[in-house]
Amino acid sequence: MADARQQLARVLNAAARHAGFPYAVLGVGIMVRLIWALLVPVVPVSDSLSYDLFADRLSRGLGYTWLDGSASAFWPVGTSAIYALLYRLFGTGHGVIVGFNILLFVPILLLSMRLTTRWFGAHAAAIAGVMLAFWPMQVEFTTILASELIFTTLVLIIVSLWDAESLSPLRRGILLGIVLAVASYVRPTALLLTCVLMLSAAARGQGARRLPAAVISVVVAGLLIAPWAVRNSREFHRPVLLSTNGGVTLWMGNHANSGGGYAEVPAEFAGLDEATRDERMGGIARAYIRAHPAQFVWNSLRRLQDTFGRETIGIAWNEPGLVRAFGPRVLVWLKLVSQAYWLAVLALGLAGFVLLVASLGVWRAVSHPGAITWLYFAGVHAVIVSQDRYHFPVTPYIAGFAGLALWAMVQRSRHADPAFDRSARPSGMRGSTGSALG
Image (cartoon, rainbow, N blue to C red):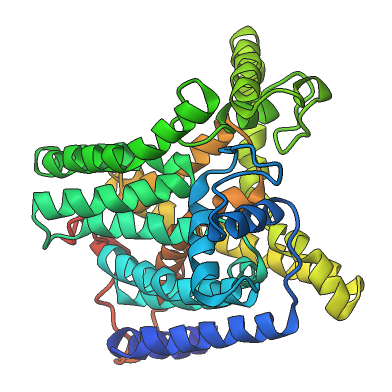
């Protein structure tokens, strides 16, 4: 066991010190995704069908509309708008989306490793990078038309811009505002990210320094979102900021017969326009929460477990393509692999967070940028609606914490040889400024 730790330590030391290691991992990760894409055909299901439909209509100048020409804002427009641009440039085949999804692995990997290096050291980053390269769900979404990869990339850019020390408040604020607006067009849950990161900065005594950039980012994002809000208000004759699904999804997770996850919209609401339906179903959900506060708390815990307790959505949404290529038996085995990988990384991620608490204390650990981003998205879906895909945006931060934990385990070997680099102990963990906090 000690020999294995020493050997792993040598490998990690070499990886951490080699400037080209992230690009080697990147190459391997791209190759894995290319192989998956060649083997698994794209067969859109669920939300993918809608993204594809709206992207096609946008690319043909028909607006964000249903087949009958009626306006929609149920799914936020961002994902379909990005796909529409790709369709205009390269044609409407699904291959262009697969290629785009593979390209998104580049910023996901490099930004994840950069943040992890800054926070926890190069050894943890090397581990996190390898985890992301082979992460089953990350690979499986290569052949899925969905918002997950896009949104994960945008959130990483937001956290990276917030964490960067070299930017002036004006530049940071403008760049943050632009990316925040784009991310909000993809998923409105991004809207509060600047506020969440501002809480992190305030907890670390950086609130005054970060406040100007935060204010600028909110103003810029508001200006960029305003045209869509005006369009929605004109189409639906009532204020609609980004989408008409907030009330519906809140209802899905909060009504008498809710299981916490996706639920079909009842027939009684089917004939309503999107905005009216959203308003009424949201009202029912809020009334239910007020009338059953204890049940709401219990259901929130259930939704939290449902969101983080499994990771098989990538197989479910690829099921028609996988069955076509390999037959139905492959589904069980792939789900087992995905689930086992997820539970192992999640356990390591939680262990890494415990190490952070031990090093920094509870408050400073909770307010760490990686931790608070993880907690924010966990909290959002504990309140609204649950599904395993909703933990996708925080997988880079979980990988970072997992890398921290695994490197700490390796370091515990007392019989390591002189090549064993002990420069990145858990006690030297870094905060959002890059300064040692231990």
